[in-house]
Image (cartoon, rainbow, N blue to C red):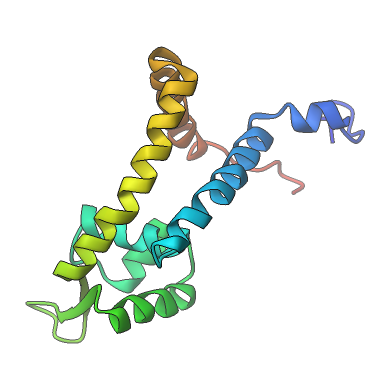
Length: 158
């Protein structure tokens, strides 16, 4: 719908929205990275868990779910799969015995590195394709989008 008239937006208007472009870019990114990651024995979802534990070791499953963008129920099978593979281990929190922290094992760190090599190669392709100036500008703009989303609230009748 167009905000002013309440009439449905045209296809061009819908596809021209930044939100639509971000979603198409996200889907395209998912499509191109999944196959090479699966060849390594991981997936985009497992990579997200691994890389977030690499960046911030000791997260709980609930914290990790928020960062990865899934529900606490959805994170459990991912973590369990990584624990079964020996890539992640659960450790009791130093002060709160009932809380389990998640940490990469040495094998998990190696597998994270292998998967991250694929993602770094993809990122290098984007940098080369866009050129360094546009790449940096896009990274800045995407960061600003993230920052400004917190200020948005839906229309009152939504």
